[in-house]
Image 1 (cartoon, rainbow over the protein chains, first blue to last red):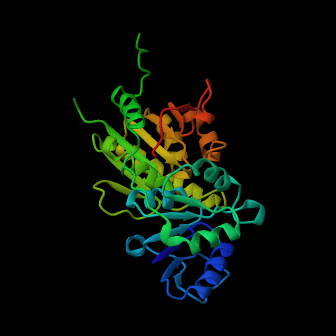
Image 2 (image 1 turned 90 degrees about the horizontal axis):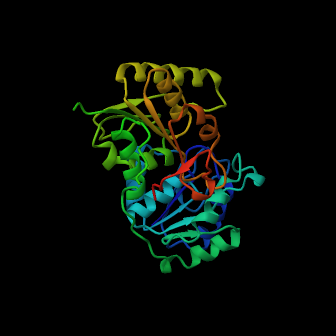
Image 3 (image 1 turned 120 degrees about the vertical axis):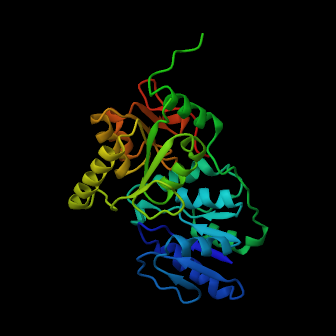
Length: 166
Length: 146
């Protein structure tokens, strides 16, 4: 199953419509989507506007593949679950977000295993056509030791600057 | 020595998921979590309203909720991964003597988030998750949640 999520803040009709077109040609693949306050209503898969925490977990856990806007929450969740995630960034120039940070995020995440980025509509369709070849990458559930240790030093030292080591 | 009290604040979604990736650290302290979405499985959790720059009234309500939370909890440390609730929490925290940490979201790879830029003067530790954005005057880079 493919689970599509566009987050909860803004709709993402271009992505929903692209997947709907693809779903019409691939009726054997089960798809479920959380599409927010979308204007476009998909014809070829089940969807809902918003999911609560539990419903979201059920849909997410049941999916073999995640398809999403470039939201770090979904990307991190997919990697933590070891599920391949196809990422389609919102483009602010098309009115899909307030600024182009999703494009910027994607450019930085290109090297990340288990995360497949499509910038253009036809790139997305190609990735969907080759879905079965996409592999997930399981990451640690927690932040890097470097970050955790730095924060712990700050907290355990009451937030005072540490003496620099000689 | 008494366990330190930490207030860990993040908006729902990606901000909160990033915050939860610090859990092994936060578990070492008496941590109260704050978000604008119901979260199960956390012993100390405060839900606040969902607000952004589009609604002044909601922002005011959010500020009041965080003020009450900060005064009740009296945290030694406040840490946030963003966005609006974290900004207010750090601002209030500075006024009540907490030490504050801002960890800007990893989603902001080319420039710091708006709240991340504005929170600068209230953050004792002001962090970006991208080495390229770190400067000698801050923000600092000390690793990332990924």
